[in-house]
Amino acid sequence: MLVVNRFVVDGDDADFRTRAGTALAALAARPGYLRGRLGRAYDDPTAWTLITEWESVGAYRRALSAYDVKVNATPLLAESLDEPSAFEELAGRLRETEEWLFVEREVDIRLSRVSAGRISQSVQSLASG
View 1 (cartoon, rainbow, N blue to C red):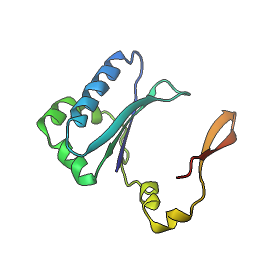
View 2 (cartoon, rainbow, N blue to C red):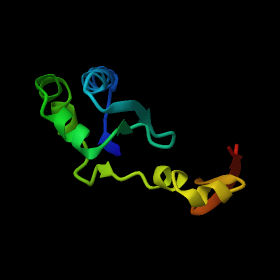
View 3 (cartoon, rainbow, N blue to C red):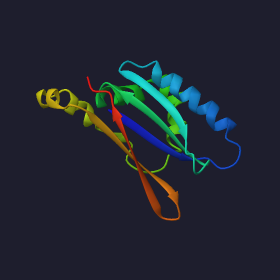
């Protein structure tokens, strides 16, 4: 499962980056944690995201109840935008199905804003297994 927390950080972001690193370390120490990363938007330096991946929603919920996470991650997570943050990963499940054996190539399509309202599309072929 994916957990996506978005933040708006105005002004100096040094304290936020430090607290996010501490939060990631606390989460990473919990069973079921797979990986995590911190990112900042290219187009808006006040927009940040903290993304973590977990073996299951249960592992994530149990992690949130751990003392170290309550002390070192929960205060930061409470500052995230008030929106859904837990997501079911669907493409991963698709790759596990028998039908996926017949896929010759996977395509990654990304949309990006290039100028006032116009959208460009880039397509990148991913290596097929």
